[in-house]
Image (tube, rainbow, N blue to C red; front, side):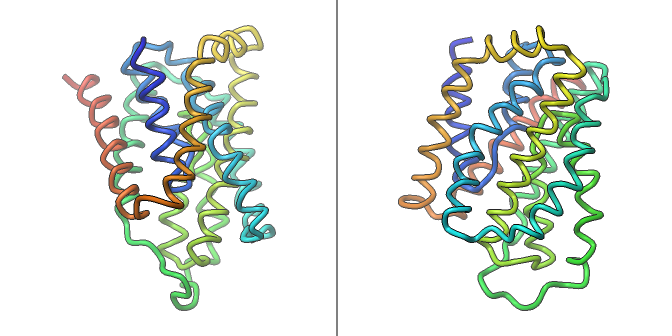
Length: 248
């Protein structure tokens, strides 16, 4: 459909502006367009990788990634993202789960954010390695990176400062998306995997461009809070549309 590349471009632009990949909304857009639900996670996870690779590299160059702690979270979640990618789901179950995930993610985006230098980590921060395990499985299951849920948890527990949380979230999305893609490849086979990515080439190009512009937008023009509100509205709308179509 001709509207999908512009929609993917806009989604990547908004999500990259707040440090996410956009996988959940890519999936919703593909579902609304009638794309084969079994192949949707392949496309959305590949788009995630393209969007967050650049931001992860920029964070690394800026030396704001808390590598030891960030890798611990990502590597705990990654095997479960692979298992999630392997798990077969019926279409109705997949779409309802995706819709609920989108609405929850949009609401999570509205949660208060940690300011730079805001106090010591809470007692819950040390349990974060356990909390990321189900996020990894959900990431692989429905084709998202999981960072849209991780970031609010990190802010709520004052796990680190704002820039370190953004860098950790970006790395988490990248590693989990790659792991979920391997699970999808194993489940669907190389032919279906390659065909899904080939059909989605215009979408992949769109998110590459949107992700780059989103990073620029975040740095120079709009306040982060405004972009986050717009992203939350898009996410909740997409999830609501999916649930409405499933339950009417």
